Image (cartoon, rainbow, N blue to C red; front, side, top):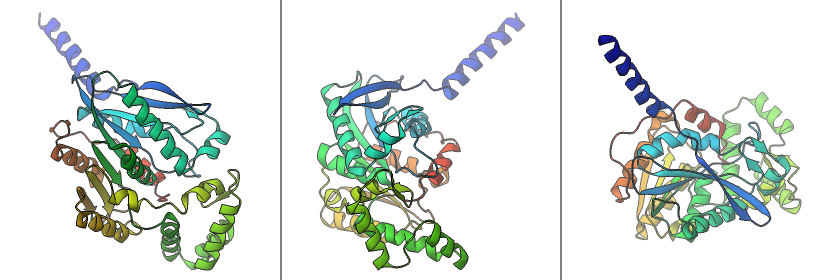
Length: 338
């Protein structure tokens, strides 16, 4: 009898552990868009009848890593978002379907304006075809470049809340990149600055930088590269500024920035302007943090959860588990700030 009880106890423990550590794969869904098929993923919690949806928008492509699936981000966030009682939704970039990647299609369409347009189509699609159990609440969550897209998307779609992490400011992207280049150069020894300037064609002064930007705008080729992205990407991105969208957001917004990130002062200014204009903005400024806001040591997702609770969105109140070391890898791989 004791052996039977021991066996049942072991079986029960194994079942509980499997519930904790084994996540079901997200549902793969398709959306027809301009002769292209957009692939998105939706993963909903199993322990609630209704739930909000958190749409997570990833940061920019970094050449050193190579094109990759958004499942990389989805899998890192899913256990924590689901534990809040919320569903997680992510959208692949064009040319990507899991591990199947068409690099030429990817690089041609991988520009901020196209990413915004595709996410707009996704939001319209789920509102016209609501998933079973969705309570209608939509949270738009973006990291790095994804936060710029999230702000513009929220301005156009009126979600329940917006979360902008490490990517909100009052200046054009062109100015931000120049500040990033200056920051990189100032932290390098002279010999490394020389090599970088020669090998990667990094401009030495503002005039050379402006000339480089003008040249890429005249020749937006998706097969030519500079500073980790295609000329086509830079031609689309350099003049973008989401300040006007941010100052007219129709929903509560959480802004997260690190004191050591490039141009954190730009985020300080835009947040203060929004508050002066009476906007519902919560600011989480983390001392000592750089661009890697998804590193677990900064507990940014705990701040996101608290913000959503404070805004009376239906997320659970118990303490959430920490994300695996992979989230640190994510922050490092997307540290360019693009």
